[in-house]
Length: 113
Image (tube, rainbow, N blue to C red; front, top):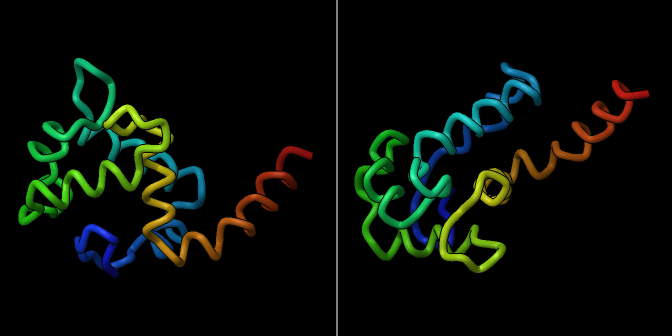
């Protein structure tokens, strides 16, 4: 799968959800955010993304791709990604997750009732 930035990755997210469950998967997304975050700012910045992207297998990510990824996920326009924006971007990049998200919502509601 390719994002608008041209970064290509295989969509393992649906199989991860099957294996970990929705809660476990969200914890893994949070862990991914923590790997990329600038610890001083608490956000994923251009610098922290470039510095830490190798940890997630994006060793060939160039500056334009990193900027595009940040722009694509930056919902509040601050030039960086908070954890919610990062998770939202990851969902948007995974068509399989988008299709399954309604099922998870129903499961969460049923658990709460």
